[in-house]
Length: 172
Image (tube, rainbow, N blue to C red; front, side, top):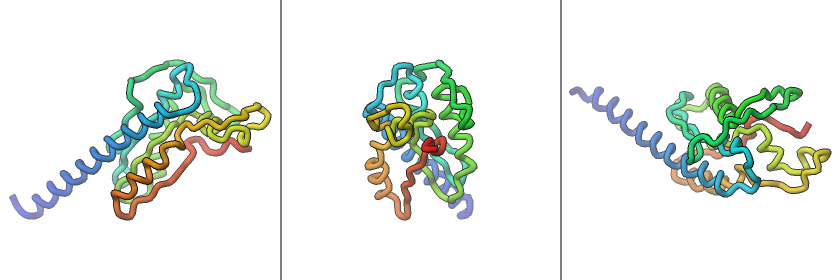
């Protein structure tokens, strides 16, 4: 076995170890997000929209979902005026992961933890998002995990944490 082959094997092994570590952390983070959310999840669709994905050099390497398996097959009627189709919680999550692959422009590792249900941002923003809907309370759906993401960031040199909304802004 030549030294070049050994370097390639070592690089693959290290890459796999980092991917597995980030996947384990992603699983822990989305589980914590689900169990610490403040809104009720009557149908189970919100549970099904919690997930994580690990990307390496723009390619999805691993993904997972909140613990407990799929909880709902209920189809939500989307928000057609905003371009949001009818789908299940898991369907919204899978679509987000597929679309996000094209968004990953960085080289290296990216861990994404998300709740991709289209109304999560509305619940997070409360009355600011939809004053006409009389939503007076803000509910933490995914924002409560920011500290965990920043703690994870400290482990990796040159790591960044970005907060994004999976379906864009509902403030219009």
